[in-house]
Image (cartoon, rainbow, N blue to C red; front, side, top):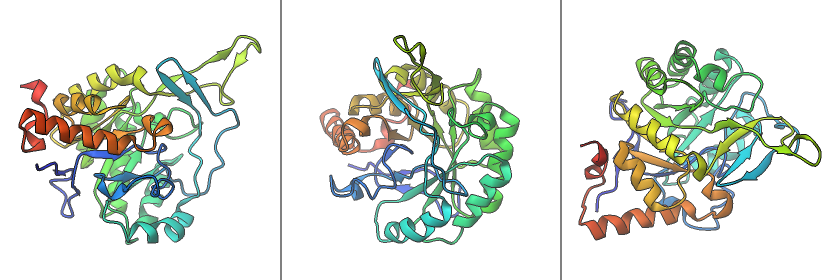
Length: 307
């Protein structure tokens, strides 16, 4: 079977994945934490935690709470900062076969560009994923991603600062995902990731206070899958670049739905928190489905529900 997919077909470097299963940013660390659990080299790509110019300690505790069919998190982009990433993580990634995509974030457009520029020429990095969709930081993130003009400006600035393929990670917290998708691809995004978390909250009725220290957070997991799937379907019909489906993918059947909706690849996120092997389980499930259905090429599945 041929499960390979080219995620940046128009970029000089390209971004060839051996299969469509990726990890989602913020749910798999830097890839080094779970390397002992299973052979992560079998995956299509690893996406790092969101990286900022300076180290971040994240939001105040508590920062994560389970909800029915999902998880609310307000981690707040806790990370080691781009300089430590270059020194400590990139040399490890350089020895890996699996492509590593660095997710970046900033509080200003200049910061996004500066982080991307700092990574230029660093080995072990195959592409940049631009986080313009985080709902639980006070500045940046979804502030840029919910507006087509600001989203496009961020992507244009990052494109000018890097020679690597650029992926735009979009927010579901918008009234029109198609406008955002067209704006970022018009600004040069080589692919788009659809979607990040939905803004939400939980209240402790005994304490009569919000549970999360940051008051609000991002809802992920099976609860958002129908929303994410719909947005992938809409975005895939509106742009010509590859779409990466993300949101509530727990098992292979979920991933296959996203692929049939038009996604060229998928990201497994919340499932990793309960089962570190979840991405591999999803990949093996896709392989079994293709064997059962007599499908030789993944490309035959992409957009199958649209035809």
